[in-house]
Length: 177
View (cartoon, rainbow, N blue to C red):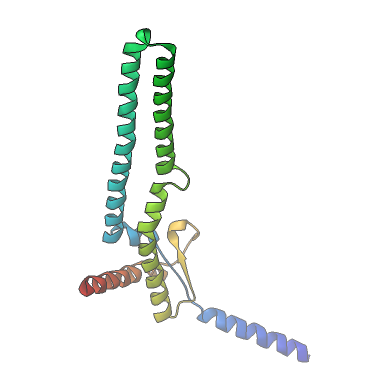
């Protein structure tokens, strides 16, 4: 009988504490949708990509010029001259392929630059989420954008609070500049 009361007591305290836990959610897509810092970061990345693509196009143009010159003179070149021209074209082709890999590859410039630009924004988002959660005594904050929430009451949506917190942080940074 003694154990029965202990088990009931533990169950009751667990249920009471579970009811005071507050689980909320936000939509990271909505938070980031109109974020001016994110838009600026995307513009910077697009400009960088254009510059890197221009480098590839420059190499491609050089390959085309050398190929055209080679085709015009191919019949009059000695075998050693043909080999030299072909080697030069092949070297440029390898350079172009390496440049493309350097830009678009698994750890390429695009991914690296994107991470550099996005990380500070995501850090601010994380800080804003933590601040809102602590100030409002939320136990768990879920992200609706990842699709893990099947249903939730709209009163549990704190997206607007997080947007406000990020805007405050942005305004403070602007004032400090």
